[in-house]
Length: 395
Image 1: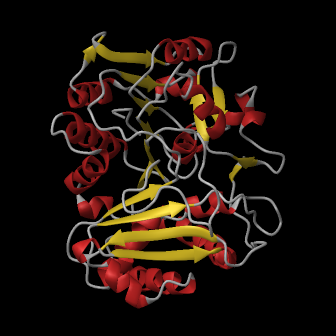
Image 2: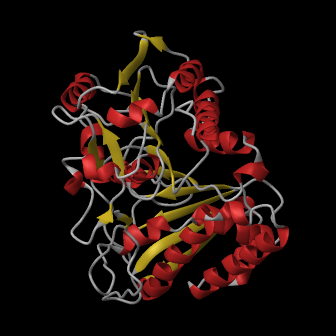
Image 3: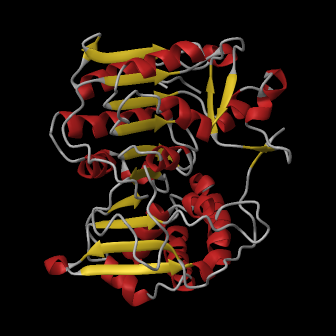
């Protein structure tokens, strides 16, 4: 069976002082708080991606144990110190309501050349680490953590005048997943009706879906279905029956992030995350302002790739999430944006705050933005150039 691709264990960088990550906020009187993670921390970033990815994947084992949760808060503080961010900086971050993590598309690779440091850093659950560390440092209020990858996009402010809902349960997956409840929830949330601003693509063949995306300059999209990893868990020997499995399984038998669609000739077509971005961004003139991804393992690469290519905001999950919770989250998110006229980041925080905190503990819901909210979206002379332009179903 294919295995999920882990980041390399060792990393290096040609320039130790090059910036890889900026973590910033605004304190009292809008005083800037800003810390940088430099390229020399590459090996630590790789270690953190591996360790924290595992910790959160097994969160059901410890989420109800307050002692374990406190241990992970302490570990988060220690890991930030290893990155060069001292406890006094964490103390300052503990007093704010919004922290931004900006990742620079530097092109630096791990020492063995098998992975980009951007990919590895994207896998780290910064949202949980910052929440845990600042809570240990005394934070009391809710915290919004956003990710930024500068792309010079326009901020999506007004509620969308049109909305494309893409759902996919092809072939054998059709017997497991259905989308009626999710359709109902999001239809109400976006204040649009089918054929009156709201359009559905219900497990259509690839070419038909592509045509539907190209026909209109969509303001927002929601994509729901089964990702490449979940498909292998849902259906035994799933990839043995898929003709184009080589699209998502590399030569080392590692499974890449992506989504399963219906092909034109194949009943199940696995699509790698970058090819999925190619598909979703086929609008003639302008990219959608917002794309939400109700897919496992969509937060690290797929959502980031969409923002890298010009989308203002993309939302996804770093790993797994309860299906109903995912639907309720997106319903709350779009409701806050479309009914309450909140900004995209505020709608994201509002949706997160509406969830059951104990049951959601350790769940990494990620929002990537193409514009910095707390600092310049372009980078300084010391950094790289800015990027150019169930019920889905019960289980």
